[in-house]
Amino acid sequence: MSDQIKFIMDSLNKEPFRKNYNLITFDSLEPMQLLQVLSDVLAEIDPKQLVDIREEMPEQTAKRMLSLLGILKYKPSGNATDMSTFRQGLVIGSKPVIYPVLHWLLQRTNELKKRAYLARFLIKLEVPSEFLQDETVADTNKQYEELMEAFKTLHKEYEQLKISGFSTAEIRKLFHAVQRLQRVQNQLKSMRQAAADAKPESLMKRLEEEIKFNLYMVTEKFPKELENKKKELHFLQKVVSEPAMGHSDLLELESKINEINTEINQLIEKKMMRNEPIEGKLSLYRQQASIISRKKEAKAEELQEAKEKLASLEREASVKRNQTREFDGTEVLKGDEFKRYVNKLRSKSTVFKKKHQIIAELKAEFGLLQRTEELLKQRHENIQQQLQTMEEKKGISGYSYTQEELERVSALKSEVDEMKGRTLDDMSEMVKKLYSLVSEKKSALASVIKELRQLRQKYQELTQECDEKKSQYDSCAAGLESNRSKLEQEVRRLREECLQEESRYHYTNCMIKNLEVQLRRATDEMKAYISSDQQEKRKAIREQYTKNTAEQENLGKKLREKQKVIRESHGPNMKQAKMWRDLEQLMECKKQCFLKQQSQTSIGQVIQEGGEDRLIL
Image (cartoon, rainbow, N blue to C red; front, side, top):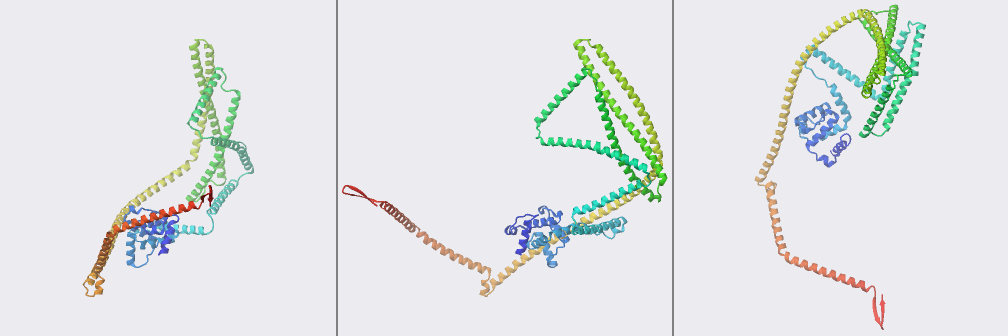
């Protein structure tokens, strides 16, 4: 038993419990504290058992622990009578009952964790046979059993992988290698399909286009993006290296920004006062170069998006082809027909891209013109403000100059309006062409849309049928759930009554046993007291108490006599003790005087002889 307690204490002092018990503190635990320790150990095995037993009824605590111990297949030693004793000991927190349970649990914690985890999925829910007559319930139960079997299979595979010696990184590499192989196979398949009926000229043209595109991406786009990223990184590193800014620093930066904005506005006003053009030739060239570079980047992005879209469309086409083959067993557009259809689509795609490019250019020019118009309006407003200021200060002077400026601005505005009108006409014509192209696409897709409508109608019918089946299932499930809840409540009530009656029975049984012991003691006492045998009579508790009382009375009498003697001799004894203390003090004083005299004579003695003093040592 001591070895068992020592093992329990050592296990509880380790991770993950860290109780810091010793033999005295562990042995002095109250029943409720001991039950809490058992609940904590069970919670380590099954996290659902993490409960404070002070917030739980004793019957619920016993029921919870007994159910988990049953799942873990704990078998207390003994027969059915001992089982009732075990339940009762578990309710009251008996040490002879809880110590073996703790010893058994702490010896095989990892194994029991696994068993508790598997019990959540592998304890089969028994459905009454009358409920299985319903097809929905039977199908659900069958699916439940299949999922349970699938879980068993997967768990076995998991265990085999654990003992196979492969780490998670190696398994992940195996899966990545398989996925990479599938991607490469798909790419190889798509390349073979693309090169099946291709001509050398078209292949060379496609390769030249890809080389140009890749060369542009490598030499222009990617270096620019890399340079921008480097600048951004440098800026972020600079920001990180600087100390943290406070509120005063932010206010100082805001004031600097406001000063710089004021200087910029003043410079713009001075430039406009000098009647300089808005943008010079150099700025125009720069703007054109930036527009061309943006167009080039936009085209590269469009090409990349087009490639991705083409790949997705090819995947969708393969899926549609497989679906069509499943429906009627035939494929659509084979051989030359498919080539003609692809060429037609390519030509239309080329036309669409050209039109889209033209629209993008027109939009860019429209934005540029709109910005120019805004700048001219802003300049006109500034000129008007200056004119008003000058008229207020100097009267009518400067009117001719202002009139010329207004005429020049109006001429520029008329030119811009004319250009915008031409641009809008071109855009309207382009929109008409696009509308016609869209109508052609719609007519080409009419058959597909018709087929899609049939599929949608079929989908709606299946959805309606699915909704009807689902409503039937929900109604049946609701009825079964209500019946099940009622039965569960009744079973719970009966179990609680059974536990209450059982605890009451155990309590009554214990009280009866205690009363029987007391009655047996009273009967034995009466027999011994009435018996004529002096030996038996001496064993009676009354005789023993009488004997002890007489002995204590004699002892008290002797002590009182001794106290009387001491009280009578107390005065003379105290006087004698005082005399002895005085004598001792007197002897000590004589001793000190003698020692002092001895120390003085030992140093030396002065003798006078013949008028001379001599020191004798």
